[in-house]
Length: 74
Image 1 (cartoon, helix red, strand yellow):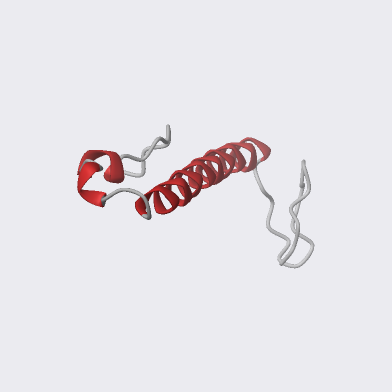
Image 2 (cartoon, helix red, strand yellow; image 1 turned 60 degrees about the horizontal axis):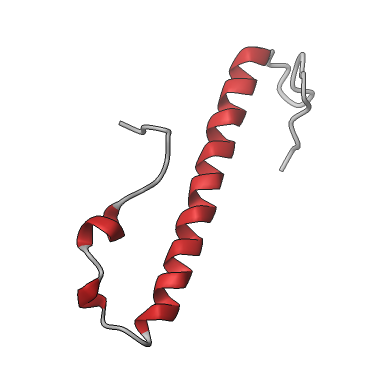
C-alpha cells in the first residue's frame, strides 16, 4: 500500500493530481473515524470484562447502540 505524502502534487503510479484540501479533509475524517473505533473497541472490551461479573440485561440497548462519533455517514 502506498503512503500518501503530506502535500502530494501527483501520484507517481497514476499521474493523478490530488487536491491538497480534499486530501486533508479525507485525512481528518479517517482520523476521526479511527478515533471513534478505538473508543468503541475499548468500551466493548470493558463491557466484555464486566459481563463475566454482571448480566447483560443490566446494560441498556441504547448504550450498546450508541456510537460516540462526530462524523455522520448518512
